[in-house]
Image (cartoon, rainbow, N blue to C red; front, top):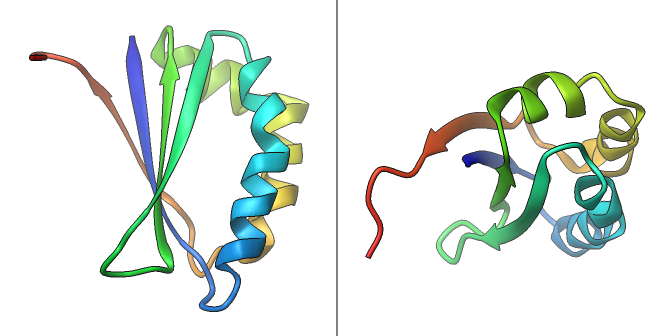
Amino acid sequence: MITEIAQINVKPGSEKDFEAAVAKARPLFLRAKGGKGFELHRSIEKPSRYRLVAKWETLENHTVDFRDSEDFTAWRALVGPYFAAAPEVEHTETVLTT
C-alpha cells in the first residue's frame, strides 16, 4: 500500500470553495484503478494549507494510471483554480504502525 501526501496551498479566502471542489471530486478517486480512498486535512496554524492523503495499491496506480486518466484532468479542473502554487506531492510506504 502506498500513501500519497500532497501539500496544497490555496488562495486565501478560497478555502471553503476548495473543500467543496474536493468533495465533488471524491468519486474520481474512488473509481481510480488501485485507489483506496483519501482524506483531506486542513492546517490549524496555516488555514490555507491542506494535506491530501490518498491510498493506492501501487505507486503506478497514482503516477501512471490516475495521472494519465481523464479523471485526473477533471480533478485538476475542479481544484486547480484554487491553488496558490503547484502542490508538493510525496509518496510513502508504511514501515511501522502501532
